[in-house]
Amino acid sequence: MQVKKQRLVLRRWINKDEQRSYLEVPFAVEGAVERIDIAYRYDRGENGGTVVDIGLRSPKRIVGWSGGAREAFFVGTEKATPGYLAGPITQGEWAVLLGAYKIPEGGAEVIVEVELTRPHGRWMKGDLHMHSVHSDGSYTIGQAIESCKARGLEFMALTDHNTSSQNYAALVPDEELLLIPGVEMTSYFGHANVLGTTDALQDFRVTTAAQADAVLGDARERGGFVSLNHPFCPSCPWELGFDVPYDAIEVWNGPWRGLNERALAWWQGQLAKGRRVIALGGSDAHREERFVKHGRPTASVWTETDTVHGVLAGIRQGRVVLQFDPDETCLSLTAGEYGIGETIPRTAIKGMDGIPLTIDVCGAKGDRVLLWSDRGIEAAWDIAVVPAFVEAKERESDGMESSGRTVQREIAAMLEFDAADNKDCALWAPEGAFAPQWIETENGQVRLRFEGSSDRLFYRLEARRSVEGLKQSAVTCLTNPIYIDQD
Image: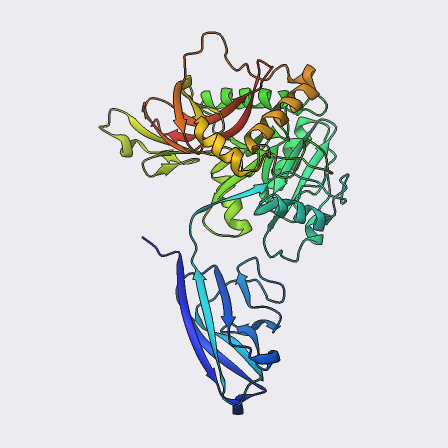
């Protein structure tokens, strides 16, 4: 098993005669590393009598200096602490720079802690559809970044309408958030996001399917990833057909509502026909609103590196899970070594009676988890949090409402807000539906198992929550499929 982190503790004694000199504490970087974290400490003495500044040198150059302003910093491939340069972390001798500004007569010991993080797979959360003042939004790029970080997101896509200026305004990397370049091709006959390149869209004036074919085809040739947005929205649907070049469908736009229900049903139909279409979602946030928030929905993407390239690679592979909010119900589906977005080859299941599926549920609050295949719903589980645990959490919150109840009311208010369109939202208990299995958990976390069949085209997961007082349900999480090779 590959070690994700390597920790080093380095010590340097600084003598009085080294005062007002620059010293180096070297360390080696061997193999692939995506991030270096540095922290240091020393006895500052009475009245700040000892002062040691700090910085960092790579094998090629000085990559940053913070003097005495920071006790810790990091540099990564595409993110870094202010004052330090992000960039590829090359192998060789690096050094922590120490500036011996004030040293007491007896000298001082500086302890430096170095942590090397190697590339590794992880889920990262972000928003794949948002707007700023570069088109018709009210957020500046900085405000959008801060809003996303406050919501616990790790990346955001810049998708202003028919312009690429936002991508150039965001060239400086943020310390915590990856910025994915993009644009939303916005025509009078439908919208489509192009992700991954700074200037992918050469023209947006599309009025026919043939023009859309040419424009989106050119965007893909330039390296863009194309997603058809809110295709069944009552006010701006996709009317240019589904034979144009595209890679994904936005099945979840903003809060859950009727237009998403229709997109989800269409996507399921395409999957059942054997077409492998990636499902994406994004907030489509333009400004501060009650229901529309950055990260609603959240796109959780499996990536091998903490980089824009890594996130885009995960999206292209369909390794995407959509959640109602960053901290809401999350589902994971695996079949042995194969996960969401991957294909199980026939050789892996040859001679097996079935396909053992493992379902991990986190953060459930009365959700119904549904296992779908090309045959429809194959199994269902109702995940209930036991009352004793709920009461304990409510006592801990000193009378504050639990997040589960708050979200429950939020979902109800959203569905009632535009009831005419939201009438298409699925019934909680449709006629003829089989009884779900009842599962109790203390913390909304549970592992489920199901014996799948190798003659299915795919399996995917969906979590829904009922709305008190309504017969409808809203999706709280859905996954892209695990596919099964039929050759």
